[in-house]
Amino acid sequence: MPGPRHRGRLLRRYKRFLADIVLDDGREITAHCPNPGSMMGLKEEGMTVWVSPAANPKAKLAWRWGYARRGDGVLAGIDTNAPNRLVREALAAGRIAELAHYPDFRPEVRYREGSRVDFLLTGPDLPDCWLEVKNVHLMRTPGLVEFPDCVTARGAKHMGDLAAMRSTGDRAVVLFAVQMTGAERLSLAADLDPGYARAFREAREAGVEVLAYACRIDDPDGEGAEVVLDRRIEVLDP
Image (cartoon, rainbow, N blue to C red; front, side, top):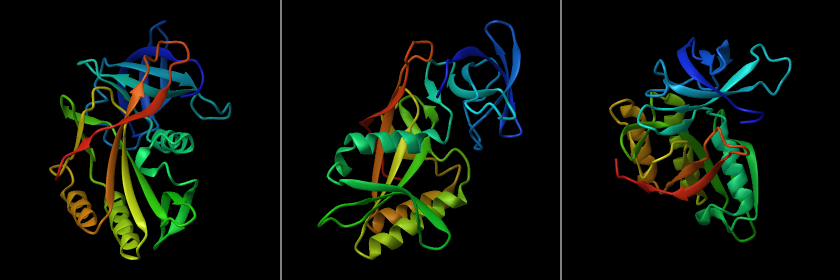
């Protein structure tokens, strides 16, 4: 999240992309919420949040919401655009062990019908690897993160696309990037989206690989604080 961070208290999140916040200095602002999902557990009134000035001076809103701390102390990044950046940085640094032997990757490659894969990894004498990245920030049980937090027909389609690429002999991987502290295991929230759970199971049976990596999220109040894709966590069978 670029720019200096300012701490405040969430008043409400509404219309998907708006959040009213009272900063610690008493100013009441409306910030852009870069998250169109349900944000279950991350939009409670009174939560501690952090915002930064908008990077684009022409942006409609002067502030951008980046982090939230739940009542149990769990810190989460709420920007759904962040995981692709975090994975790109990790790929470039060779920090995803299962994919580190691929020397080249390209983002946003068109494939299948009306789809773009997040990354296509390539290398000499290696099968092409189609990598889909999913953002995770739902935790209803301590230590257990879940995906998705609402119905995602698009996500189910992506699993079908990956299964189709696997059937051609290519490699296909879905990587869950967990923007929450305290994450130890990942499971599917089948009660929230049984359709995605079904598509996930079918893709896994077709040979799609599943990875989950938790982020290290520094205290947003700290100078130079950052978020880094950090460690692999266990994925439970659905």
